[in-house]
Each structure stands twice: as C-alpha cells, then as structure tokens.
Length: 268
Image (tube, rainbow, N blue to C red; front, side, top):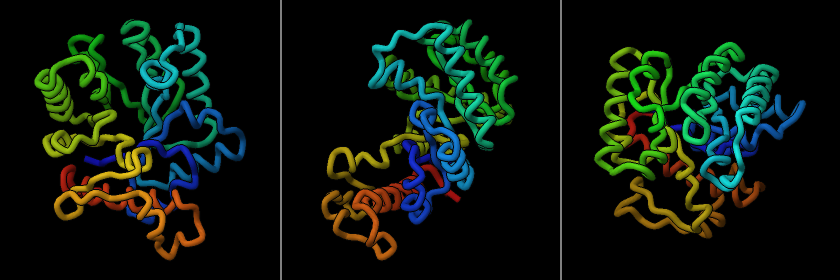
C-alpha cells in the first residue's frame, strides 16, 4: 500500500520530501484552489513529478474541519466542483482526484448526481468515497475503479470492530473485482499492516511533530522521542541555507517513511 504524505500544498515542500525518498503525496483543493495562472501551473508540475499524487476535494475542511460552520448548499457544491474540474483541466494535472463526497451534509442522491457529472468533466482517475450514509457499499464498489473508505468518519461514528468490519468488506470485495482501494485519512500502523493489499492511504500525521514539537518513531530504537528543536539545529548540508522548517520536514518525512515501509510495505 502506497502511503501518500498529505498536506503537500506548497512547491517548497517537495525538496525535503523528495530528498527523504517520498514518491507519493496528497494535496487539498481547499488550499490549492487559490493558486492562479503560473503559480497554479508550477504547483501542478511539481505534483505531476511524483510517482503518484492525489488531490482531494477539500470539502472535509468545510464539513468537519476548521470551516465546519459553513452552510453547504447544492448550488455551492455545483460551483465548487466546476472550479475543481476547471483547475484540473487547465493546469494539466495527470494523477488522481477525490470526488466531492457530500453524502453526509447533503444527500447520497445528490452525491450520485455530482459523481456522474464529474466523470464527464475530467479525464483523470476519480476516487469515489464511501460514507455511512451510502448504506450498502455494493453499488459504489461496482461503479468505482478507485474507491476510498473515509476512515476518520468511521472512527468518529462507529465502534472499532465495526470500523474494521466495514473497511474489510469494501477493501476485500473491491480488490477481488480488480478495483483500487484507498484508506482516506489513515496511517494507523495496525490498519496499514492489515490492509497492505490495498492500493493507497494518506494522512498528515507524518508532520505531527511540527505541530506538537516532538514525535516518536518506530524507525528508531525503543520508539525514541524526537525533539523538533534538535531537528532544527541538525541541518544536513543540502538544507544548510534553507529554512529551519525545511530541515524538520526532511527528518520527519525520512523517519516516517522508514516506519511506513515496515508496516505498509515497499514505497517504491
């Protein structure tokens, strides 16, 4: 399973990530929709240079994140998806994109309307997302070439046993039909190990140390605690003239990549 380093919304992030050996990333349309003209083209060129990239719709921020107070309407989603498709088409983005999965906030019926429309708007692979509101996932499994399970949503709404049951059902049935499966918002080590046969997963947890000033890594003996301030000072030669955050991103990505290889399998 290929672990996508999420939160890649700046060209400058590519230098430390690539130096660390990262080949798979994810960015949010919520952030990158603001990029215009040459800035947008340059950013997409950067994304296209990875082995595989995912852009998600960015609606998670509006539905569950920092902007969850936003009132979503059908017209707003129609306009959002039009802008999303236009960005993909105009910039020459060539990898995968996540649909506008609005089942929970609007309805499964409207999500199906937008899903079918999206397929006519873009010519890149689309990842369709299962949510609890969809009920039986068989229809979506049959429809999708690349299906995602929203792991954070399951974690918030069902028991751990039920979360694993749903994920196993979708992933096993989809892969048996030759479909790709993505675990959305998940780099939980136990799940990565069990679901290695899935195609991909992602999360922003790789740079959690930057948010909390320290992190632990199973790539180190005894899960040693890594202090971010030490990483800022421990600059490798290539980044000696770069910002402190560049050096920190490199070490976080490098250590997490070793961890992911151990649990999710090879990341080449």
